[in-house]
Length: 292
Image (cartoon, rainbow, N blue to C red; front, side, top):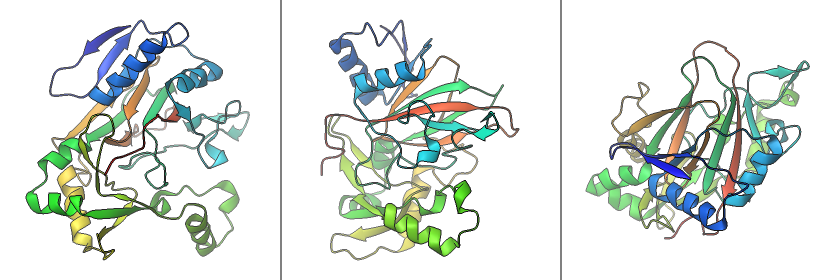
């Protein structure tokens, strides 16, 4: 395994000459430590079948399939498929997923440690992901917001970006909303928590899922407080020029793994409708998601 380090101003490392089949347990542990330390690891020149991709994921952690079957790969349900390509007249996966700031599964009681993405078909340009390191956001907060973050909890819900399924077409929206609240009730997490491996403090707020902040007594904070957190993090900057936002491009053969505790991300799609297919695995590690 050869590691190419980025400059100090940019997250991530690039790994060459890595084969999960021949990697030792120590190599796998080294790879995980790179993810924790550098937040994003890009493993180059991979050529993996769906089964091999899943086997690689299981070497890194506990793979959990997405809770909605319409996202599942037809051969391996662990694989979440983002695709605008039909196969034999049938839609496989869901098009244009994640086009908003979020951390994967923040709306669930047990979010994931790692997100692992493997593009299959890429458009000719404008295909990648925007990232924000929320530990850096926390460090840069003004004192009043940092105090609120340290003494509050947030509620997160999928309701704003829930994808309507083909079978929902003739259902009343009130019925769909009731189902969302029943199947995925809002999840409560600390507004700021300590990363169990790095010891960094993470601001755990996303534009896509976070809708309420409560103080320690359970009293909701003014909605303007949430807007201040989001503005300070850069998640409300529609130009994506905010200093803490990084854009990372994809290339075929890349397997990109990132620290889902520390980062929020937003998919970047081309303005045209060129074919695009990406596979994703989501993994738990051996640590609790956060320390208080």
